[in-house]
Length: 306
Image 1 (cartoon, rainbow, N blue to C red):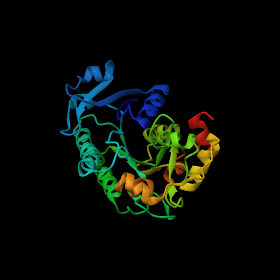
Image 2: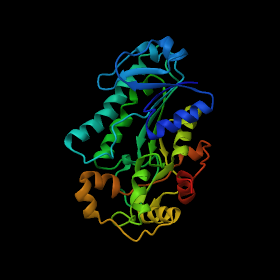
Image 3: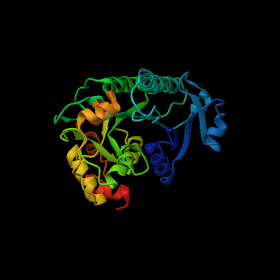
Image 4: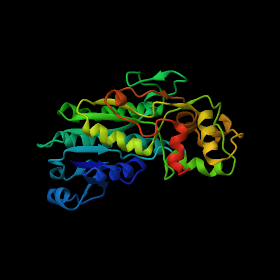
């Protein structure tokens, strides 16, 4: 397949680019910047198409004849406190950028067959120990609002007959970046432990499985709409901390009180670090997806080479 992929330099995008290439697919990177390349370059040599997600400016001809599009780009939600400006960038980069891309694809004469677009388990909000499937209602809070708008922004593509898959990713496990990489320093020093009560659920997925869900979404015609891209075995924060401590051979007796996390991170703490989402994937297994790393401790050992 000829696959257009945004966010190719990100954690999931890097893994997805490698996997797609290893399977013989050709990845054309959608990157920020002016001067969109001509369609002949995009499809036959220069594997880059440039666009401006703020305005939606892109060489429309370069989007013609693609087999699939994977859209992962968006403002990093975990880098620093959520100021009003930061929240606006998070919302705009997802909802508005996705909407502009979806409309551009819908306007193509030769549209791609499928658009796989990232979303997140933040869609469900803070739900305690309630099991959450793809049919569960959205929750409350800023991230839930963003995810609803993010998924709704793909509607122009779906209305134009493009099969749309909204991949609701959980915490992606990789030593190369993301939440796990940020945890490693304190845990290696023996200063790691549960955050807050430790009873909140963490829904996670190994980075290789995350990339595989993308390839599976592109290759499975019956898969569409929301898909929980998480392991089938969510764990509590305490269980996560204990497993990471065992893998690193370090104690996990220290905990970070909720008030301390709120002082450091503000609103981000309640929505990302203290929220509980016990997300269960139903549509991936039902469509034949096979996890390489469904259980946490083996997944951590794989991610950390332990």
